[in-house]
Length: 164
Image 1 (cartoon, rainbow, N blue to C red):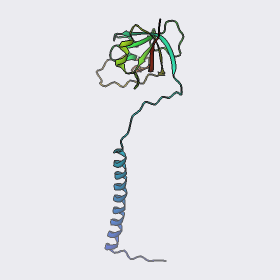
Image 2: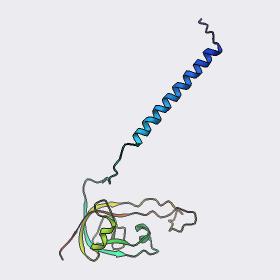
Image 3: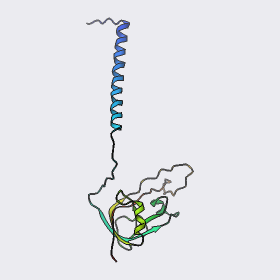
Image 4: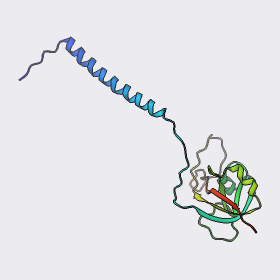
């Protein structure tokens, strides 16, 4: 059997070495994390699908109102592609789809196409759950008592006016 004689000096040096190793490990972690946070990053829109969907219709502007469609569109006037009676995959508006901006086509581009028959290429986007900003905020609720989701529509990457 081995017998270890622990003096107060040896106990102190053991505790000190454990403390120094913990601090050293934490400081290297913090240093690495701070270095990674300083690497510039570029945010880009990533398309989930490999191909763009093409839709044809007339661009219309709709004013904000207290309707479910307006709630889904957002907090202001919005633009819709009126596809008429054509059957499309996901309707987000009575007339067709709510147009959503992308890096290629911004919200400010849509007014120049109002009243025009266009072909748009893009992808459907789903609604996202809405998180109220205040307990006093008013919003439409579903049957489960939660706020209705918002944000559905069609994200436009290309738009082209068609000759009528």
